[in-house]
Amino acid sequence: MRCGFCLPTCPTYVLTGRERSSPRGRVALARAVAEEKLEFSRAVRDEAFFCLDCRACTSACPSGVRAGEVMEVCRDQAQSFYPLGRTGKALREFILEKMVPSPGLMEASMLPTRLYQRLGIQWLVRHLKVLNLGPDWMAKAEGMIPELHKPLRPQLPPVVPAKGEKRGRVGFFLGCVMTLMYPSVSRQTVRVLAQQGFDVVTPRDTKCCGAPHLSEGDRTTARRLAKFNLDLFMAEEIDYIVTDCAGCGAALKEYEELLAESADQRSLEIFRSKIRDVSEFLFEVGIREEGLVPVNATVTYHEPCHLCHAQGISRQPREVIKHIPGVELREMNESNWCCGSAATWGLKYSEESQKVLDRKLENVRATNADYLVTANPGCHLQLAWGVREADMPQKVLHLMELMGRALPPDSE
Ligand code: SF4
Ligand code: SF4
Image 1: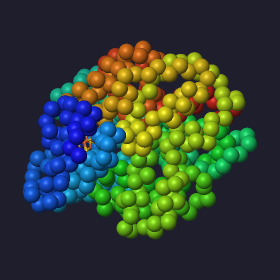
Image 2 (image 1 turned 60 degrees about the vertical axis):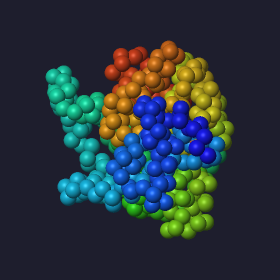
Image 3 (image 1 turned 90 degrees about the vertical axis):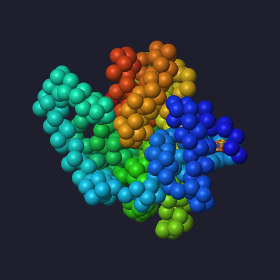
Image 4 (image 1 turned 120 degrees about the horizontal axis):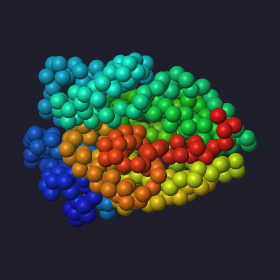
């Protein structure tokens, strides 16, 4: 329709004021390439990667245009129009095709960082501000990494039994970033699900959901991972597949489309019908409130783009918050405005990312809440870093960490 309703919702259009950096402009570029009226120029490639894939435009579009997903396809095509050099190609292939799909290699890759933190090298590097001599992204990347603990994947029992009266059996999709960087969050998710009366099955062989591959334009590996996870979870006797990572949830819900030509349609439909974000799941089955203890805190909620825009889930996390005794929810303005993280976007475009983040932090500050709650590890990393850099008092929590505080101690 070219109505332009999407323009004010697009962070890159708001930052630049450029039509080509807007959803409407991007779709027009992609369409011109598809109709062979335009070459796949560097400008097309740059706009494909400059898009945050935040999907805010999809929420705003009356015609259901999905500019973010169109840009994912353009990123994939960009690999053949603008191939990397030999070293870049080998590195990219190793990371996307070997390392990320292997939980063991991913866990091993975090060891040097854990040693860096444990041996005091991090303290020295930060104290001497060594990384300020390098490019902006380097200091930011180092500053964003939370204190690392042992990955959760090898520690989680294959089945955690339900507490009290059993209500069902769920599969837990443990995301890569959650197990590596936020093991305490997913530990709380499993604890909450069990306390709510569900057996929690966590298949240890679960691989990355494929979201990083879609973001980086590697749809081939994304399909391979999707097929693996589809078969893995379809072999389990479970009522639902629950995740506490908005990015994983959005990717899992897109398997139906991603695998449309390479997997059994019926399996895809069943798989899709079982996927739930944890807030969506708790809202749907109803929160069992008996035994919850008061948390006594004020919280504000940042909506991850991959939850509110990609999955249409806005009300459910708020309802979960409202069910936690003692918690007061203070709404911030523009709660569904992107935080500027978007996988590696926040590092590649660190200056632009800072501007997007500043707008978010202003809205957080105005609430004067004790906690800033979110539901996606990428947002968590960016917001925790931003709050610390801006010397703000808010502590950033995942929704399940907040709910975990309301569980009685005997539900450990
Ligand atoms: S993408 Fe949708 S909202 Fe944006 S201009 Fe086109 S029709 Fe309008
Ligand atoms: S996905 Fe986000 S950044 Fe990309 S065009 Fe849409 S609103 Fe803009």
